[in-house]
Length: 353
Image (cartoon, rainbow, N blue to C red; front, side, top):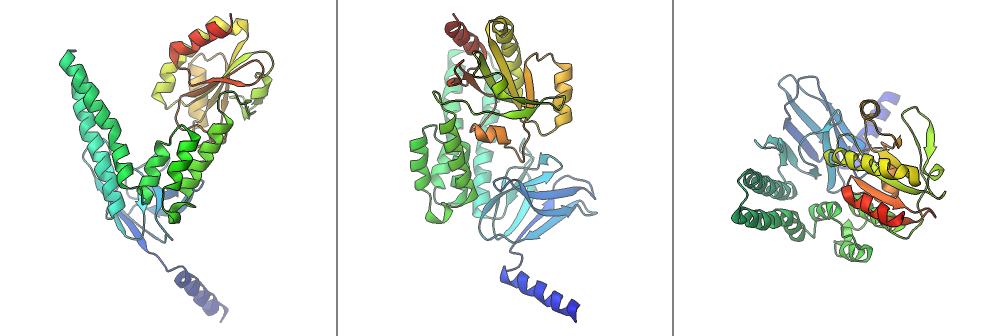
């Protein structure tokens, strides 16, 4: 009798939430037995569903969403295809035949997102071909004009989708740097989206950006180094030194290209009261430790992997891209942000005369 009661209770609970209202299915180029997870990047990377690839290499996920949301289809730590606009519908994964690998189809929001991505890939191929041509005034003019069009594609898609989740998601990728303007733009999204996790994440970024703006005091961090020892940012900052707080990752190509410039700056100024506190947001601690062992990075290196793509340290400082850095003055205030390459050395030379 108890088992019958529990079964009826479970069925009632399923009915109360409406039961499954979406499916996600297809083939993702994986082997039978591989595990796939559907994660929500704007909700602490929580797992929405888990499935195993079938014998015919296909998979099928069924679930319930109360409203449209952003999801990532993950195989281990690798995202398959672009983010998904997950909504009540039958959504299919399909190969694209280009660098994207896969796309998700079956809803107007996903189809609009696919069209934007396809346009960027197509124009990106044209730009890449131009990069390989001999340098001429005509080539430079084409690169300039087509480059502007390429960069405007997401903006045009955002404007065309300001009344839905796709527009909110695209805005989360290119939020206005001016906090007042960003808040004004957020208010323009529909009322039903105002409490959505995507817009909430933008608000948190705006607030963090304000807390870490030039002229504000630095916020302390206490993170583990490669030996497992906790090292605080305050052990370096605010004690008469100029400190560069640097956010990076081993998988970030531009970050790695900055390392030679950091080494030059460190060699030139460390003896004059300059230090670096480098925060890696790598998910793979072992990879980060190997990178440190194989490369001579003589400054303080710590790790803040966090959950999903956003580490707690990066979230505290409102980091939206890497590399990102903050130059902290001897009195503990933030003197400058995002000084790349030679600009860092030039600024230090100016400040440390």
